[in-house]
Length: 185
Image (cartoon, rainbow, N blue to C red):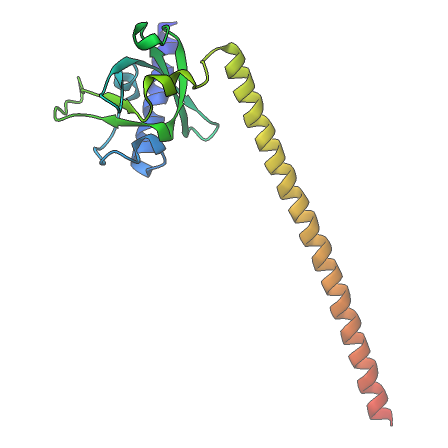
């Protein structure tokens, strides 16, 4: 179990660093570029609201898509502020990471600041098995729909190209016939 956890943390770290380097993480878009982020150190960071910077809980998980792009964060809330100790799914564009002034690779001082107040946070999806399967199915459906749309577009392009080639072939044949008739007269 420990070996599995270390592998997962290592993969998360690689993905977070890649996202930070390429700028593909929307969570980091609002923050000033501060370098690389460690998923191992980021998980467990305190999460604050942007209004009054109230401590709402801890970053509990990071959700990736098939391309290892960060899609969302899971925030495990405290009992305070009426949040009930539930875990909520937060989109990356609703959060940013702040390292503060103390930058130490061994013990970074990460803070996750969400662009939501406690009331808005309670309206976010609750992280659960049913949410996980629903999100997974939605992602799969979106992928299949994109694939079908691409195939449909390709089919239309091929049909349009065939029609265009037939029209061009007919026009060339007609022009050749006209030229032949003109030279024989």
